[in-house]
Length: 348
Image (cartoon, rainbow, N blue to C red; front, side):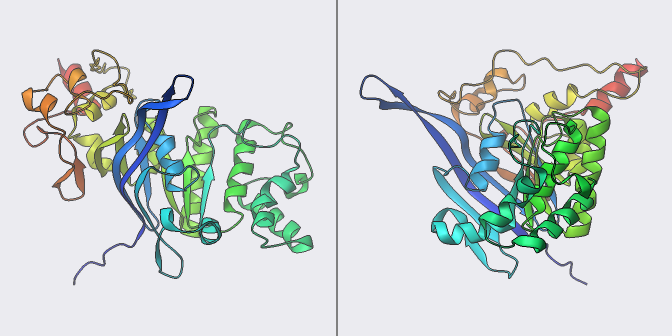
């Protein structure tokens, strides 16, 4: 029996977001910061795809560009609506994009700055419903109370302001606000990075429960590999605005294909005090997105680099089924994960 091909809720093709650099009295454009540079990524319905990479690599810019919160420079973002119709978000007029946005929401990083301190919990959670004119009056209030119960908050506190709540409770308010319009796709932008470890686990479990219950799809942006390994189905690794590897979570953590992924995994702690991992220390600085080096942007820091790496930009290709990589030498390198290095070190 032939396997059913999963439905893509999001298909991003060759997305670019360049920010102009201006100089002089007339503010003429003298260059561009290539925050997102020719990225392609797809997310299946009900799937969680994580984006990882160093701070400043363009993860958040990509997430906001996908939602059209900031206008991409070029590229296509195809979104599958609930009725099965596929629309290109970048070409939609504002009134139609506004309707589609009910299906797309965002959970922000900082639960302290993302909530208006002058608004009650009722007003914060109901704001998307009011903006889209979906509910009002008693029905609105009852829906907000139901959302609060869904995310683990006491509905009796809906008239309170954000300041008495803890960080975890504030993030639950943010999650309830994101769920208000019953979206199908949510961008989680470092949704747990500002929280204590114990609270992180609670919020992650809540997100996974909501995904299973409501059929949500997530783009999960993070720099914490431990969090990513727990929640994601596939992982995309970014370096200065470009995707360098994309693979199922388990396969990527067991056997990375890109040298940058190998270096990231080497920094991940192994929960065994008897094993000491050999961390790969990258030389040099992160490439400047306003002045990228020729060829592969990672080649000045890569210990496996060859002449071709500095001369040609590597092709983004599917090296193995469901495993994509942008590296000239990916087919010949035998890279190790942090677990393999720990085992090797402990044995020696």
